[in-house]
Image (tube, rainbow, N blue to C red; front, side):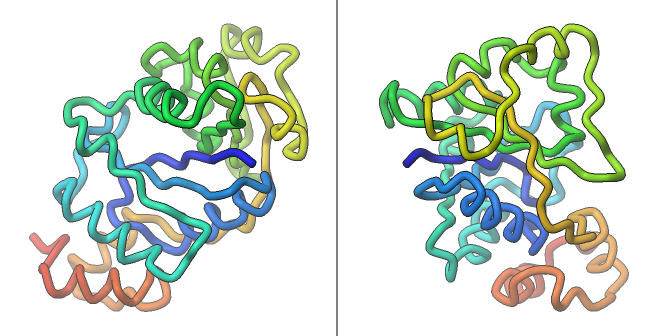
Length: 210
């Protein structure tokens, strides 16, 4: 029934990430969603925590959710985290006939032309763009031409292994990792923004404190 890949820094993982991942799993009717923490993100500032700490928080965060799985291949691989390498690695494991979808936000999709070997992404996987009313899809001409003939509804992604693009509108939780880090640094409460196990780990390890 296919897989969906959800990459990010997860610095830290929070309920916005987890709710989106669960809804993606339901919308695409995939076996599982794999959350893939980046070792060294290329298009974001350096994470506030080490790769091992972010991985541990992610493992704690999904401990009670059977639909979600942590995939640590980018951390094990080291170096810059290029999604095309990750997708090719997963494709080699699951075979050529299995549907594979990469989930990304509209903000990331709008600058996908800056990604490493971005034109090859649809050769390996579908793209699932999480739309937001305040951040609509707005791509350049090269990407717009690349998308021609690829737009599809979510239910059709199971019909082929790769090559389609769909937009999903999910529950929008106004939670950001940046806000959580600032709250921790200011000594403010972060309850109900992320799983309790992750909160306990942040406090035990004194993360995000200057």
